[in-house]
Length: 137
Image 1 (cartoon, rainbow, N blue to C red):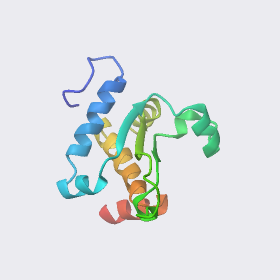
Image 2 (cartoon, one colour):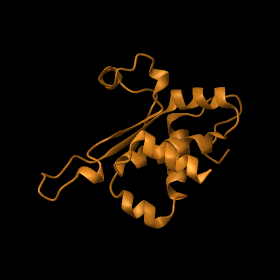
Image 3 (cartoon, rainbow, N blue to C red):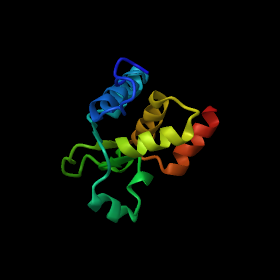
């Protein structure tokens, strides 16, 4: 793992995961990062109860990330200024998926979740994102 990795035997902290997410974002092409704009990235252990209830999710381990905001495809210059868009990464579900998968590094999984949520910022659906990932190999 990167220098953000915890000491041996300890699960990565919120700060460790935030550092992995920042590294993943910085690894994206500059033009892409510029198009993302002023999205706020946050890492929490789990989504809050209100978010899970609104999404109809009973098991908090089922949600690894979430985009919250008005996506770029639905914004209009006639609309009032939107609240900042936010991408949430959920540490415990990400770690759980990583431990169960065993075929990807934690860095790869964090990058995947981050890019997936950024895709929603651009107005892409889950199916759109899955199709792009399948085409990319």
